[in-house]
Length: 88
Image 1 (cartoon, helix red, strand yellow):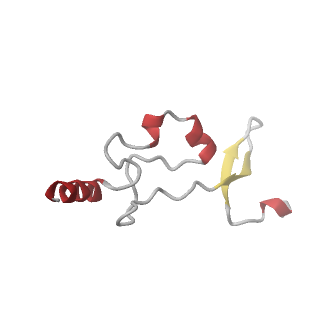
Image 2 (cartoon, rainbow, N blue to C red):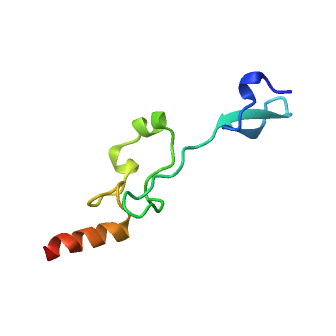
């Protein structure tokens, strides 16, 4: 039976081949959910699904797309928002 701290559904089981040639069970944290669009709620493309400590190490250009509302709105909602601003 695994140790009490490992009996959690928030951890995923990963089979790792160790130097001795055996395959052992390691427990790793699950990745965070993908970033969502603030308007329609779809998954954002170009935004990595990483832990905060890994995101901090990444350059700014890797964290979100280089466009208006990048990392906040999806491309469809961004286009609609820009067109709406132009019309006003």
